[in-house]
Length: 288
Image (tube, rainbow, N blue to C red; front, side, top):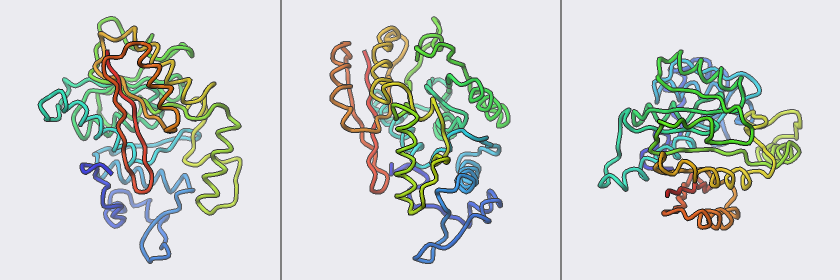
């Protein structure tokens, strides 16, 4: 993980149970005799997230109704820290902090995880957008309950990403996005079945690992089509955004995305890898 990631040394379950006593009922011993939880159990993951957010990020209220995506916090934190390093490159190596740094989280979801972590770690000012009105409502409740000045805007045009969200007088140092990965509901379900098998569980087709639904998990054309649309639309906001960024789950999509960025004449293009244990994730960043 990123060296500034608070979860670099794993989970201190004794401390986390103090932050959220409800987590204790989900603990069991792994084959090595260490405390763990069943990561295929959504209720256990929610309880873990509540403990992590309370103990490490000062978020005292975090509720997430079904069927919204329940994200793993450490990986989400890595994206935030890597973005901080990206901004530092243009600031003599020093990470810029405080409300003067404005960030836009595309598809923030009901969980609001990136703004919560980013504001706690660096004091950045966040705006989140989402196309789902229920997700917007839940995210607004989380922001208000924790006394955070996070703005949540609903995207009312299913074909737009930045239009209708970035106003004429708005400007952002960066935008970020965890795009829908799958091309269809069937593909999302197949991916879930693989996750269940990898967790050593019998297939439960009615359950999605960590929750989630459209448009969190899938959209027509999947991740590649979504990010290509984002690239195309980003041209219209080139003067209002410093860095545009998006996670890219599938490494094989990078050549097509880089080609699309060259086509729109992006001035700078970066691919930044992030390592979490055996897993490598990445995001692509561009500016005009």
